[in-house]
Amino acid sequence: MDNNYFNDNTNQENQNNQNGWNSQYSAGSQNGYAGNGMQQNPYQQYSNQSAYQTYTQPSGGKVKKPKKKSGFGMTLAKAAAVAAVFGLVAGGIFTGISYAGTKALGITSESGKEAGTKGSTNSSSSVQQTNTGSAKDLSDVSAIAKAAMPSIVAITNTGTVSYQTFWGTTERESESCGSGIIIRQDNDYLYIVTNNHVVADADTLTVQFSDNETVSCEVKGTDKADDLAVVRVALDSIKAETLNSIRVATIADSEGLEVGQGVIAIGNALGYGQSVTNGIVSALGRTITVQDTQSGQTIINNNMIQTNAAINPGNSGGALLNANGEVIGINSVKYADTNVEGFGYAIPISDAMPIVEQLITREKVDESQSAYLGVQGNDISADVAEAYNMPEGICIVEVIEGSAADKAGLRQGDVITEFDGQRVGTMRELKELMTYYKAGQKVNIKFSRLNNGYEEQTVEVKLGSQTGVN
Image (cartoon, rainbow, N blue to C red; front, side, top):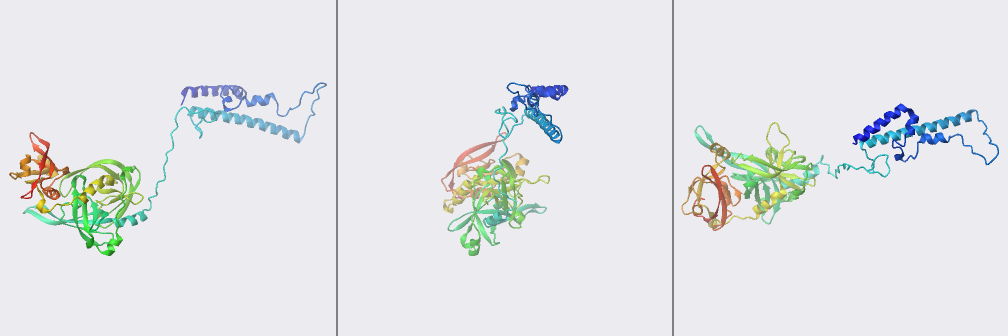
């Protein structure tokens, strides 16, 4: 707002109020009324030439006075004239006040010009109205859920848990639940993507399809660092009716996601079977750190999708869908806090698929060709690492003489944290990973060595043949 202009205009208006209506309109050209397209004061125009004295000067002779009119007709004419003059005066006042107000406040008309001013433009840029686009209504997602549910499965993990009692170490059977997404089928298998923590430390795994049919499955490959895994089901173990009722999920590109976009989450929440929730993309590119309750290892996930769609235990590995029913993310974790609601996270599908493709195509080698590292170690969980100020991973307790590890310079006390770019936290994970490598292959192993504190190092190892404990 131009404060000088506003003050000048206010002073002028006060002066006009002191001088009365006639002086106000006499000063009309000074107050900017001429700028409104009025070439002279409208009151002056009509006072110089009366609206009801329209006689003319004859060309010579005596001036002939008009006859005096009286009666109702004359009264009516006077009233009409007064009304016309009053209308012009009121119109002039309204136009003047409107101009002064819009000029002072910087209001522009729809055409982008100052209100009441011809040919003038506003020197400041106007703020554009938000274009909301054509967002889809997700208040009713029944059709999307109906189409997507045949692509989602429930996964049951049965394993053995060891725990300490007064009488020593005791083992018991444990069962946990998760979800998965059918992403591929070939001539022999159905492939299902899920989270690594859903299938970790499993003795047996089963999947339940949308028609409640349950079959056994096996782990095809895992990537703990990205919390991804692929399990596969032999087609000959699935009934024909089930095969006809299930479908492979449609994968979308998650790169184009926007905050506020509507999403739907489907999964085996709390192990009760498939359920559906919906919400929006709350944020993108989140980094979160979680602790795997089974292995005790800390997992860091980058570039996560944050959503307020309810994601609960059992939803892990399930699908996050867009309004077209396409998979845009793999539900992974919920922020657990009694004071926090609506904080769930999913792995973007565009980040996951290259890893998933590798897990599907990578094949285990024949046992006779399996690689051999030559170490024995103890698992360092997050609790142990914190208590003893150590890194999480596998602490080497013995290096087999002459083995690949011995030749590479690994020694007792070193803590292995990565094998060929993949994080490892337990001996079980290392053994599983080694089944995909042949003797003679070269890999990089990252480890930490105690030297006035733990220092991280990387060494290249040429794997040996399977001749002992790895």
